[in-house]
Length: 247
Ligand SMILES: NC(=O)c1ccc[n+]([C@@H]2O[C@H](COP(=O)([O-])OP(=O)(O)OC[C@H]3O[C@@H](n4cnc5c(N)ncnc54)[C@H](OP(=O)(O)O)[C@@H]3O)[C@@H](O)[C@H]2O)c1
Image 1: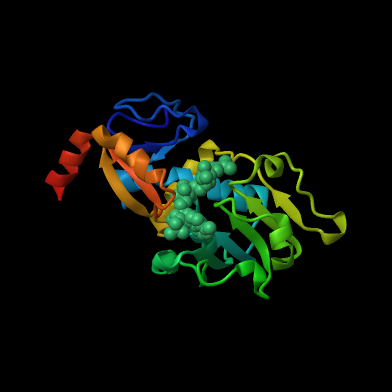
Image 2 (image 1 turned 90 degrees about the vertical axis):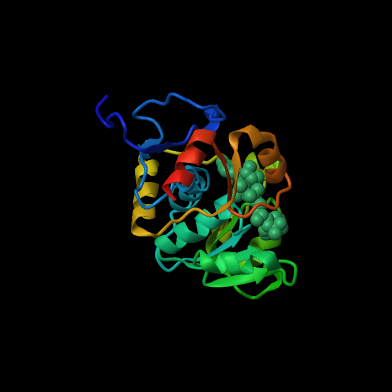
C-alpha cells in the first residue's frame, strides 16, 4: 500500500457496486477513496460523494460549466441539488435553485443567488434564460424547457425517463441546444477534488438525518418519501458512541 497508512481517516464511494451497508468493506487504494478532510465529521465526509460526484460529472464533465454561466438547478434541496448549487458556485456560475417553500432558506444557505418556489411559480413560464438547466427530479423535458435555455444551452437530466436516457428527446441542430442524460461517472481523482472543495469551504454536504445502522430500514423508508433535504447517513454504533464521547 502506498497512498494510505494504518490509522488514516478516509472516505470512499462504492458507486454502482454498492455494498456499503456493512461494518467493513474493502476498496482498492486506486479506487474512489481519499483522505477525510479534518474539517468534516465522518457523517459529513460520507455525504460528500453521492451528490458531489454526480454534480461534478454532469456540470463539469458532461456540460463543461464555465465562469459566468447562468445555471438553474431543479430539485436544489436534494443530495445532488445541494451539491450542484455549491459546485456550480465554485465554478463561478450564477445559480438559481428551484425548490419548495420549506426549502427556500436551505437552498439560499448553500449559496444559490436566487430561488424559485415551485409551489408558487413555474420557471419554464418565466422570461429568464439559462446556459444550463440541471434537473434532479424528473419533472422537466426539453419541450417544457426549450424557451428557458439560451442558444447553445444544455438541459442536464440527472433523473430522466427511459426515452430521455436513450437520447430520443433531441433538439434541432439549429438551436444548438443539447439534452444530456445518462449515468454519472465518478473518477478516483474526483474524491480528492471533493475533499479539497470541503477543505476550502466551497462544498459542505447537507445532512438531513443520521440513523443508526440497526435502523437502516427506517432510513430507507424516509429516503423513499422523496422529501429528504440533502443526505441521509447511516452510522455504525461504536462510531456514534465515539463521536458522542468526543463532543
Ligand atoms: N444519473 C445518475 O447517474 C444519477 C446519480 C445520482 C442520483 N441520481 C438520481 O437523482 C435523483 C435525485 O437524487 P437526490 O438524492 O439528490 O434527490 P432526492 O433527495 O431524492 O430529492 C428529494 C428532494 O427533491 C425535492 N423535490 C421533489 N420534487 C421536486 C420538484 N418537483 N421540484 C423541485 N424539487 C423537488 C424534495 O423537496 P420537496 O419535496 O420539499 O420539494 C427533496 O428535497 C434520484 O432519482 C437519483 O436516483 C441519478
